[in-house]
Image 1 (cartoon, rainbow, N blue to C red):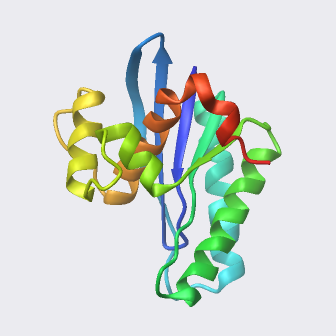
Image 2: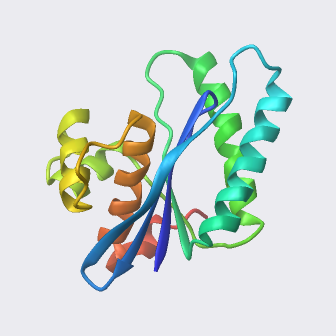
Length: 164
């Protein structure tokens, strides 16, 4: 099974692709889709939509997992990220209903065993679990790989995390 993990963002959307074969998780690819800050919102959203479609064409994932959005302070940034997440969801749902989402705490718990883990601990575990030589960069890509690993580790309970 091929899983595409997504860390939503307007300026930087992280993606991570892994292959699951039984208990084995293998890295396929990771990276980011970026949009320039000075560009109008509609063009940035179109770029994310087109980029997501390219990812879906290239990797043909069986399932796609998103990090759930969490905003504590800046609602303006939160709204922009919500737009980007919506466009990314649209691109995926046009091809499959196999969409899942996980909270940041669920991701930390699944990858490190502790829901209060910091970013570096998550990145080190992603590196270890996927047998990587270095930590994935940028952070958005590492986060997306953590989302994909979380989904892989939640296979027995995945119906609980399906986006409705």
